[in-house]
Image 1 (cartoon, chains in turn yellow, brown):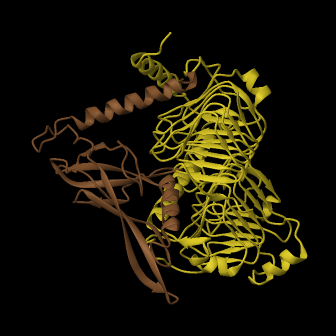
Image 2 (spheres, rainbow over the protein chains, first blue to last red; image 1 turned 180 degrees about the vertical axis):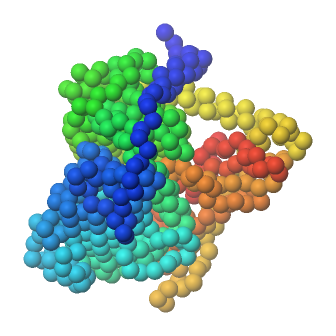
Image 3 (tube, rainbow over the protein chains, first blue to last red; image 1 turned 45 degrees about the vertical axis):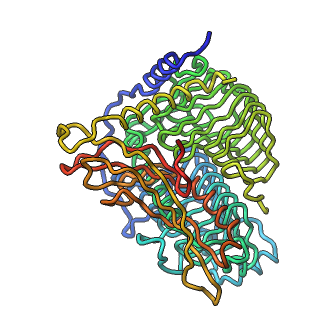
Length: 444
Length: 159
């Protein structure tokens, strides 16, 4: 049957009605005590493991998703309003603590590893930074760690340097999707773009941004834009980072509120927390949806091994998802809840896959798509992410505000941003494509 | 051929386009009823302007500004610009202006243009994926009008 425009509109309206069914829940207990350390820091131990510190008012509470992995928790200190997303890893150790300043966030599958295995040459390079012994990983307030980013300690982020012309607000730092800081020091008002890296012993100065895919391994590369790896931060960069900070402090508040309402709601397949400017009411995922719609079974399943959050409409049943979806997957529709994710029959979704959205953009995926390990599907400002039938996304690849035509192959750690790929296209591994043009390659 | 999974998206686009069209064709006059919001701004156009900047370390530098303009909305006393990025939309305007125009710096670097044109173009292409803006007109009584669609910074408006 031909799908007419009127029919499509009716389908969408039905889908929207299905996913916006609000969960009727009793109001949670009012935040009781006002347990705060004098400096506003908390340590995520004991009853403070999820909402930190326990009993904090939600407006200042830090939220740590229950799926996040925290080691040596007594050596982790978190400021107020920090959001730690599903499957993030904060790995502290004796002599290697982790400190995360207020209003920061650690996104899905991001890793802060304070005590990695190191080598003599790496240690020698890092020594030039004069990071005090026992620092581990120190992160200043207002630092954003995007999906699949990594920090390998020792590292200092957002400390030192000064104000910059492009930012007339408080200082900030951002690491975009897949970026890495390895034994380096980032001053305040710096940025590491998607798939970029700052290597051991490097100090990135205030006002500079490492460009996508670049690997900064010498101080000259970090300091001199003429060498092609860094550029000055612009107002546009600052505004985008401020948005991330605002969005994620909102998540810290609203996920804390939802946890206090009912603890199982922040596990497995569950609702988005609502309550933010772009997600007013809580919505729940739908499984077994009719093709291309959200007409299916509203599903809450706290025991599911991955996280499926909010208005996600999956054609697969829960039983099918148990077979096809790996571990550490985070399909997080907590932001663009006005446009549900419509997910066709999954070919295979490997471990660590992340879906995330922005308002009024949406994510639509077709049938028999294979999602490689740690791949990401993300809408962009004003641009949906569309992955058509029979696409293969390589491990670590990123689809960002783009359409990937049917049968296409996106190579490992490739990024396709704001690009519409024709059916049957191939994107080479480690390619960076923006606006239909090849921007460069991931250098590491 | 349109995949079955894409149909809802197409429907969403159709609905949004219809809504935008309805908003754009709505009555726009200064004597509107108090409860009627102003229409969404329309007629967007954009330009990029390269400027030589303060030399640094003895080398020339440059910046590129993106200026977005739109048709004045009758009855509007100001416009609010809200930022939209990969992690959400601003809860408060990032900029307010009485003129129907917005200027943002979107690229900068060292060296001479046009030698650095490829660097500039790459920066703009990247930043357009990281930030968009939405424009809203505000009436004299403070009522905020309908928002425009999201416009990626650094790019010419589509459509």
